[in-house]
Amino acid sequence: MTTLYEEIRPEPHGGIPVRRVTITVNGEKRVAEVEPRLLLAHLLRQGFKLTGTHTGCDTTNCGACTVLVDGVPAKSCTMLAVQADGHEVMTVEGLASASELHPIQEGFKDEHGLQCGFCTPGMMLTAKALLDENPDPTEDEVRWALSGNLCRCTGYQNIVKSVLWAAAKMRPAAAADQDGS
Ligand code: FES
Ligand code: FES
Image (cartoon, rainbow, N blue to C red; front, side):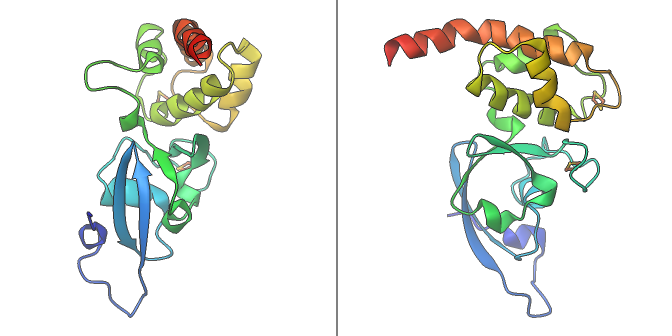
């Protein structure tokens, strides 16, 4: 068990109660003691040091903080850490394997889907949820899926192309999975 609350605030003061949460993050079970008001984004960034999850607005607008909770995109700036208790969370750090980029990451690289990269982790996780559900999306479907993620740098053309690139690369693998099941 890893208790990370102490790294966020060494000595809880003011008698604020803490609650122990167990969250599977990128496939690894993590335990933390948190104040009930702690945001999931802050637990991920400050507690678990997963700083790929960005916070851009703190008001559920920009999508930079998007993570997957049980496979569904969630804006971690407006979700409490205690709400993730018992659930599976994927952050952008969970996309690549030890030796290979995820096809979505390759797509963003090949199709120039980023400039500053601030929005990119959230974009990638939203794209992953889309492609897991719909391996062959149309351009309109990609645009609709990404409509909760804002980019202030690139416009969206290359981001959409990146996701379509990844979809094309992932489709043979998805088909093979279905054949084998
Ligand atoms: S930081 Fe969460 S939506 Fe902008
Ligand atoms: S690449 Fe800079 S905000 Fe999207």
